[in-house]
Image 1 (cartoon, rainbow, N blue to C red):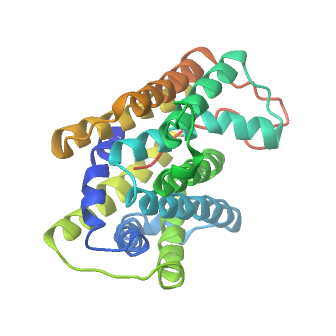
Image 2: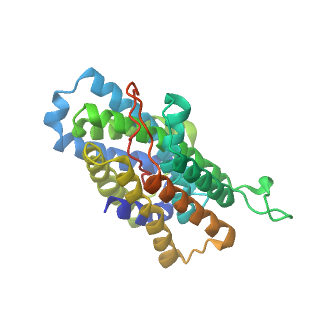
Length: 297
């Protein structure tokens, strides 16, 4: 259900960006979510410890960066491309664990990563005169969305670590609260903020603030205590599919052959990685190789 909510709201957020700048829109949704979480989880927040604060804030920093890149990129690219590119974070998680924390990785993970990165190339780099690549005409929105996928990769890792050590209510509130503060402070510095209170914008803020943020990250923080990474990541691969279907129905968006092939390779890479591959965790691994994957819509 969370994957459906995240995927189906890409189109709504795209429309809302006509009435608000990206960071202002994100600031509003995060504030709504943070207030709701503070009210409902006030008892757990009252007994917050310093280690929990550190873990939650760290996850929140990457959540802020991920949404800042994603929404800014969505203004310049299409909803389905944004969702599929964001979805590459599922295969970037084991890659980051290998590169930084030296976690052993299954050969099928490697195959999945190669497929997904090939799909990412096809979706972001248009064909040139030879049909292979035209780097001069790369869409800036696609590049920003790739930055979003990288940030969500580290968000996944640190949420996975925090959810195993601290109450999920604290993890949910801290990451959203941190993102809300950073979005609000950075908006006047990084962009020319604007906001027009239209019905579309109000609906987008309420739906994304309540369902996509407060409810979604509470459910995710709770579920990551029990759900293996392979199951979680596999479920979240449906998010870009929901995004594409919604965009196809409401915006009549068609990816084209090259982008469509890239989307299939990304989805195939994630499926190969999560169904056939498994990250092996050494006994002293400080992060946890089985960190669940998520993209966050």
